[in-house]
Length: 487
View 1 (cartoon, rainbow, N blue to C red):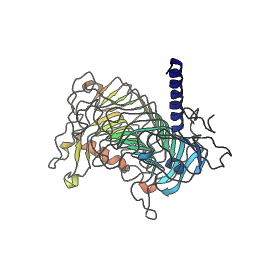
View 2 (view 1 turned 180 degrees about the vertical axis):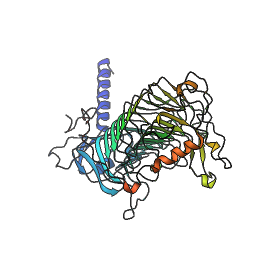
View 3 (view 1 turned 135 degrees about the horizontal axis):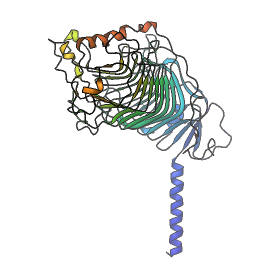
View 4 (view 1 turned 30 degrees about the horizontal axis):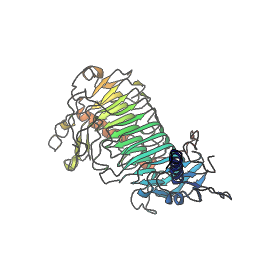
């Protein structure tokens, strides 16, 4: 073949490859109107989101035009690698109509993007309409709930709104048993568990940015999620409690919640690790957030969140090696930051059978700005920061082990209000290689047990209002192949 012929052949081959890759990416448009009379190649029209998902494979786009879609959507493994994107965050609405079920569930599917839409009012179930398994989750990347194993990777969500206007919405935006993902510009309100939840990943490799969580039982909850995990630049306000990473047993295993970098025992985790120094590397980081007025005791609660200490900005039950830094933490009625050791389940009447004894150890609280926290007073534990341990003293004669809630440190904060222990940046300052247990004993246990009883009963709670419109994606056509909506 001549040189010119070879160049021409290579050029044609390149064109063929380019054409092939273009053909591989289909755009499936969901509309409640009529499709145009002429539909270009690689584009199709559907009446429901589920129908568009069903024909989508890796690299395909599901674009949803404005409308109220009264359906539940399930994405499974054969649809890994797809995008589901609304053309307007506030007017593309997946509506549960107050019925039992889940909104958009991504089940054991990798690298699925959900963007720029609203999901609302999918309920946990009732006697009249029981849930067949787990319900009440508006947007859920489910890597295998309850399996104790990582079942998927790649969960990506941005410009999402989830809300519930009843008492029975469980979780707003939810990921469990998955690794590697991010949420950006998300909003959730009205849920009886948490607005956003990330659980069951020992090494999450995840980032949450620019979230707004309000009017939930918990703004953020994360059982047994740790390692490389960042929550930043978010607004957490008007929940019963704000941000609550936690160790949990038996749910969403394997425990514990541990923020250490590069944990050596991820595959076979020790549920009760020992932290031996304040100078460990921490990769679970809560930073640059505004955490304010988390005192809303009108919000709905469930059996899990009703016993939670309310009026707290950052709640750390049985947490290991987390870093809380450069946040603004204000106007939380009981505590700005509250950390404590945590027997879970808490069953002293049964000699703690089945319990794990999670300590509060190795955490660092640094360079935060606190103001007007703990204004209810009445206890030595209300204020800007309270750390508690030594509960083995209270439960002598049971199988409660010796406490080792040590090597927490507090430094460089603006703290005008009380702390427990007092003068906390002295003996518990991060200048110390090791710090002792903060203590608290029986009085601390009484405080933790009494706070939930001071809040209204679940039957006295109220549905929360629908939110105002949230910022929509500036350019919903960004990255999308050419199609009738994106020319």
